[in-house]
Image: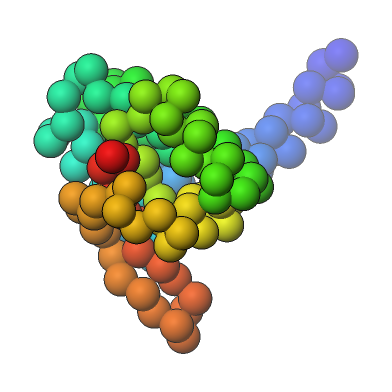
Length: 145
């Protein structure tokens, strides 16, 4: 047991090295991943500007919860048709939707619904901008009507 412990300790220390470096980052923006930082900034904006009772739908609700000053949110539907998205939002009395490009699910599902029913969505906040060269898209906070 003692010999095995001495063999495994260096492996464990190496495996934890990236986590240690990540924990020392003062700002996520220094990572250079615009989709991630735009999502985090949008969550923080929601925490500062939306009421605690807001019904918010987004991808990654656990991360949204941590960065939005503990606002509750639910998962958006994934890979469904625009009509089904609208019906889902109506059924769940959705007030706000986060459209982000951190993972493509939101743009694949929500964006077609926004384009099909533009009168149902109002842009209230945007983080980031479109950059075709880097294939990055902004993160939008939308009010669902």
